[in-house]
Picture 1 (tube, one colour):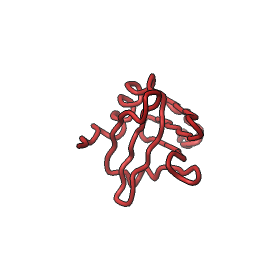
Picture 2 (picture 1 turned 180 degrees about the horizontal axis):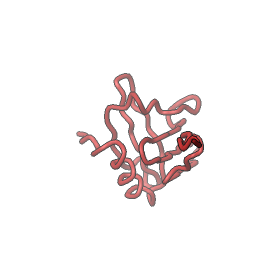
Picture 3 (picture 1 turned 90 degrees about the vertical axis):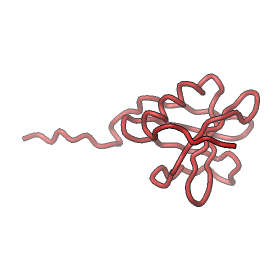
Picture 4 (picture 1 turned 60 degrees about the vertical axis):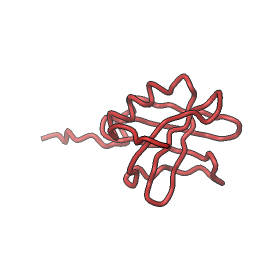
Length: 105
C-alpha cells in the first residue's frame, strides 16, 4: 500500500506574509494546523518564534506603515512586523489556528 502521509515540509502554506521594514524583517506562514513566524524586530538576529510555547497573541499598530503581531510566551514576547494592508487577513488566519487574540491594556 502506498504511504499517503504528507510531510509538513511538502505542504505549502495557505498564507505567506513577509515584510522588510526599516531594516527589520518579519514573516508569518500559516498552515491549516500550525503557524511559523520569523522576526528580527527589536532583536540582534533573526529568530523563529517558538510557536509551541506561545500562550497568546495580539495584533496592533507599530507605526503608521506597519503592524506587529505579538506572540506571547512565558519568557518573552516576539513581535513580527507585517504590512498594514495585511492586518485583517493575518488576524483571521492566526485566529483560525490559535484562537482569539488576548486583550491588552
